Length: 397
Image 1 (cartoon, rainbow, N blue to C red):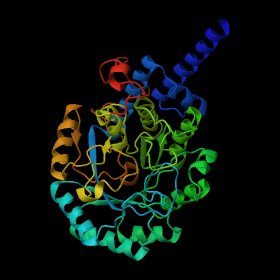
Image 2: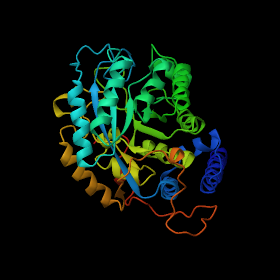
Image 3: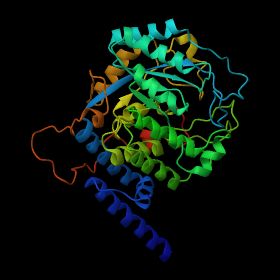
Image 4: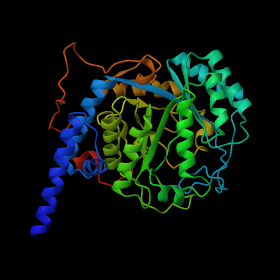
């Protein structure tokens, strides 16, 4: 009993010290990030409030809408968790015609979207020439920034994509634990994924990485490594979402990630990266109907609605039961404006480029010098008990 009390006291001391360091914007160690991820219910609210205050200081109150166009669900990889894996013979495959991709982007720009994300599986049919053509065609008709999310490519192609006009590249690292990465990706290597991310930086892309939460075999310390990798890579974007098992994959019977731990990871990503753009992911809203609102209150400042024509969407099935699957683009635009206003935030009207690229400084609500220690609320920034807000780890919306 005495040892248990001492262990609990020691954990609380480490947690308290780590949170104070976070509020002073000091660099956190692996042990400290792990301790913060292991926050109890009361501590979790303080963690979220700290992340939300850092979000306010560094990226302000605007939320960026980035529309996703899923133009191909072909993939040459066989990742164990993903419904697009080449081994999934039950999936109906598609490739959108170029004209349709361009029309989606044109319509998105007309509505008011300032970024489109061109996303696919790793589809070798899309040669570098076809990717260049796609990027140039979209830029010719739409006043938008372009994010590519098309997996690993030969390194010399990244520069050509950038020269064609692509602004950003999203390539999630999925897990920073090399052993777990190897187990989940039978035909990829962790070292190559890191080389790709660094090469993307070298050629001038704004780069996004990110991870899944709740993968089979994943520990809290592994997730802490994910957070520190985001810092070490100096990412411009950090995408973090829960693992959702797909029954058409080898991990279809595994338990999924939880809302609570996903929000903790989002909060730590904000605390560590400070000014990176962090989305409230569709995966999170899939397992919790209020997942986006909760993420925005825990440090997120982006949302990425699906602009893919509805007839294709059900076939881009990385995981099942995706939220807002049949929402029309204009309805989605209106709905998100309302939801963003409900949390006291506003929709951005700019391109949402990385502050590191634009030279912008941290946002502040006044011209006064900010204290080196963040002010934070001990009260619940979301409202209600943790159990009420999250429905427990087994509730998947």
